Image (cartoon, rainbow, N blue to C red; front, top):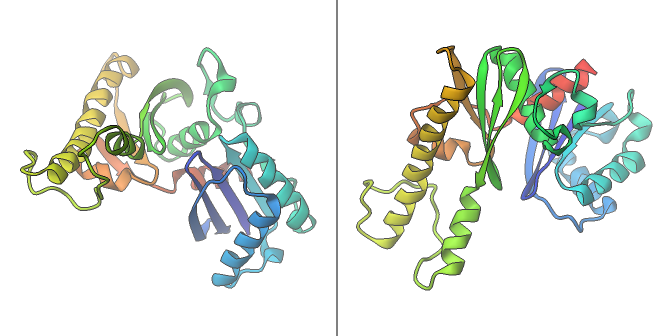
Length: 262
């Protein structure tokens, strides 16, 4: 089995693949101060819940944007998994996967590993010009050409960041749950107005920004697809006309793909 690890600023998403099938997946809060021993204990318990022994794991691939947690995970794998692995731990970075996707940004080393993994996974699936919208702590729009070139993108504050800013910086705006929609775009109370602003607002943002990106990415009218991933992708997709597909496990599938390519 292959253990895939995607360490983000807010959440760490992990998955277990048996061949090509994702048989277990978990989304837990990222804690940079969590020691490697505690990581091992936590995931030993999670594996037990799905009746999987760590001896069944013969491959591990890691992508991280949190250096402190990356170090903890590397130590965890070396201490608790390494003797069962058939290949060394694969730690994804621009330098390790640059031959799978051509990075055409000014400073390729600045691009988060997860963004490149998403680009490779999406291109392998669709093989055309793409915008990958990742709804995480930040919302990133990553642009990949039909020739599998990572061109760059845009970064804007994520939904949770915006909601936290509203409630913490204002006296009368509460914390709200946006998992249920407002009855109309025009909110007739504070909570519905905030829900509308987040759901319809971010949906319109995706549509507007995708349209502007399309004019640069496809100046001659070529085909382009917009796909969404990340923990809140399913929440915003119904409010966007541009998003054509949602895969909130895109990064894990990309890590699985890269591991076997390597």
